[in-house]
Length: 340
Image (tube, rainbow, N blue to C red; front, side):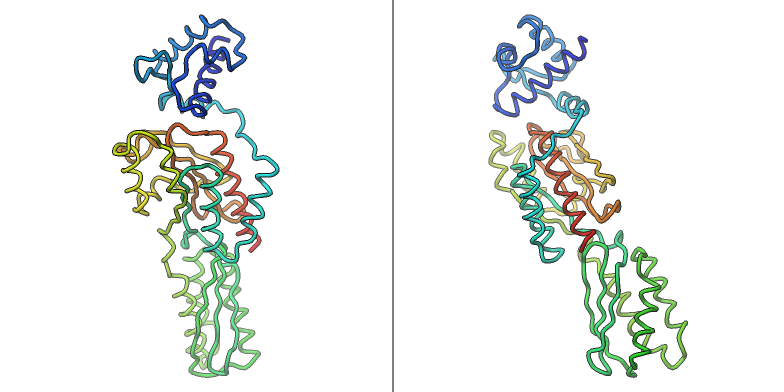
């Protein structure tokens, strides 16, 4: 009972401090929250929480603020992530459903996430090496020229032109299309490339050069790693809400936002199954960003996490609301990739 009561006091301090940005005193807690105990008991609980390192007194005022340890306990003890309202869900769906391609999905996601959370949003482009081949289309443009279209599970589409040394008739073209799809569809990039490399050996000798040209083009398209370390960032203007401490808080984060490798490390590995990870303050990989927290999750079609998205903001943030927004946007993006 005592532990539950102290956790309720800590929860109230976190909620009030996030809301007001002011240190929280015992009188304010009693006035604003139905804690069911006397002000003296609340003061006692606050003293124990301070002694255990969950809250601290920033200066000589009577108020207390949560420490990183306090935020961590608060997040760990969340029984449920605050659900998005029906209006918020409709807004997310209508905004993301208008996307025309993968680049548009990523750019819309980062804008939406920064607006929902009022934090800096970071969305990693889907990692090519983790994606699978969804379909390969081979279209004859002229007797000696083919258009090869590679469609990946990320929603990414690669198109290449292939000049043929010898023309293919309709039956040969249909056979080629069938063979490359049989070899590649459903396979991760590395395995698809290996299986495709065997296709020329399966056809008649006089067709091997032609089939080899198509296979080489497909393998080249699969080895294009432009997006493997690309991220989109949105909502940098939200950093103005940090308040004091530009040199110690905002400047290091601004510098980090320019380094994609740093941002990818901040986001961490893409988690599966809708798991939202929260790294608070010094738990992150960079000590100079110890006054920030990262809320992130993986996204991708089905259960396959191809990349990460999330937000970076001050440790003083609405964790339940932010976690809900990150999870909701990731789910909608995953659904779009699954249906595309």
